[in-house]
Image (cartoon, helix red, strand yellow):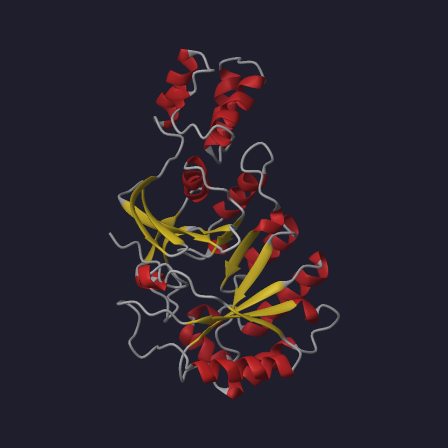
Length: 343
């Protein structure tokens, strides 16, 4: 039997030791209701069980260790040490209304090499396990933070890591994190097998597609994945997703000055999203101001505010629903495309 997480390991261990059913509930209650982060402190359990949990899983419930935290207004970025002497980053956003949203990493680094993204300059070190993905959230949970919504928009391409589906299962398990499917967003650069699997297995999870250029040749230059999965093929899969789920699909578009922010680009984006059938009103564009870092090319800069307004005006005039993303955390390199596992 393939054990995909510590939660399954604990179940198996309790079964091996012929423990009563309620033991599992006691352990989960200690973690998720009482924020107990060490097995040794679960004093409701017999000592031999605490010792066995510690022996098998280590002293801490969390498999990853926070090594550094940067905080600015409304944003906290945590650098975690993971097995193999590597690091990943996760971000907590607190909105004015008190809502707490989390941006979580799924890979250490990323192998897809999008030209404008700091994470892509690292290359792919490895996929994170289901525990390493969900433990980023568990860290915040154990420290008393509410988990209102979660985006897989941190380091890595979520749908390139098969463990993402195990992670979503853990996050939505009512006995564990208990997150509603609609509180979770998966972001992808357009990996068709992963989109199809998400549509089938988690139809209520939100899906965001990173477009960044409506023109195939330019998108291939910015995002080499486009050679394998061209824009139109991805949009056909997203049409299917909308038909199957009845849910909105979000189109992420980072605006780069003089690169992809022209009126011709805006008109081409509108052209791509119109005439897609009964579900076309469920496409929603999120425009994202570019965030530079020391490792992204100096030729990429943030679009001029007037250019952004013109882009928005064109999309609205064509009936496309659109939001300009509020930027949080760029001062601590915690905004879109800036995560770089800085030591």
